Length: 344
Image (cartoon, rainbow, N blue to C red; front, side):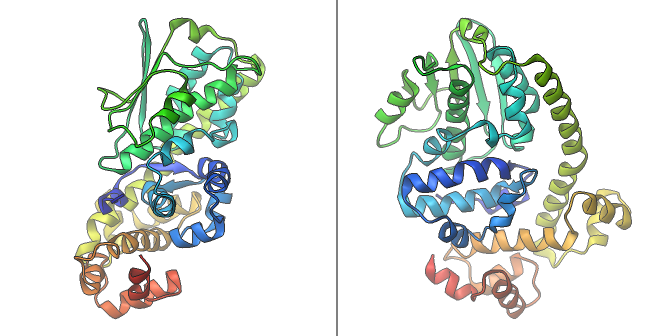
């Protein structure tokens, strides 16, 4: 799987709560060691412990690239989605759990899906059948894994919402725009319906009656409380997390011209330096931490490209000299860029 370094400058992100909930059982499924996988991906376990944090998509893709390299499973996204639980979505998950029926749960998903990560956009199209589709902004090979994780996760969670020991709900059909995997039978066995690949859209089709299925955990009082909490978090997300994403995007655009300073970034965003600093601090991040994180993510992607020399990479990351890049990479990874490249 090739990851476009340009993703590092895009606003997409994934909830740390989601990764923290699905990663342990996923690695157990593949018999992989979590500490080893996180170390190979350059992900600090402390990042996953912050349930309210959002991880840049480029870091999430690097994590799953490590898993893919060790398993060779082109159904990695599907296996990830099967493991989704309510806690994977935090407040959003509990708001869905307390909904009256599946239709109301889907409406809340559409409204608050940013809380699980600013990644894609879901859309509900009424009719017979009802279509629940997803628009993934990621292109290329990674889109396959991201899309399968999202859509399989919908069905997995819906079963937890309305199913019981004797009944397992299934969509009428599932659809994916990418090519079929080597083992497509496991998809149809698990979905319990036809699964179409190279389709016109990504999503599922449902019988209209499914929207009226009551939820086992329906609780009107809790639902109202969770909806207020979700609305407050969404407002906070729009005010704060979008700022973090905007700063990261500006840094990405400016890196190849040399190390960007906060003054230049603030000017491009039309903000005073103190205003930018204080807003970042309110969301638990510093300008330097964003710059370091972006450089580290990009460095590990660039080092996988044999066409780029170390001096090329240093310039792309805004370092004046290759020696400065070497020192920074040793600080991030505890090894030289050459040693890291050799391991890959």
